[in-house]
Image (tube, rainbow, N blue to C red):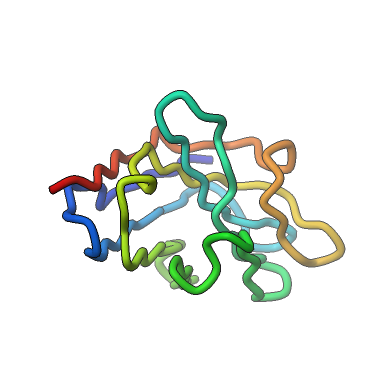
Length: 125
């Protein structure tokens, strides 16, 4: 499995950004793709995920509504649209392929085993 994130950039506070995650070498059956981020000096945290089995999304409570995932199954791509960005959103953003739980995805790190290299998002004026 290979994953490639793209779209990271320098963005001003209040701005928006779209990240892309292209996956290859995997099947949507019994799989999930999740988005995660890691801020400097902090642990990696889950943002949201898509279940290839059920076609459903799950989000972190703290980011729901401001961060939105969408999927293009044909292109094996999961997008992350981020809005109203602030300096606390600065970090490296990763996508990963993992397993589902009762047909749904979760954003717990142990469920994910193939990771991309990450893309840097910096929110600054």
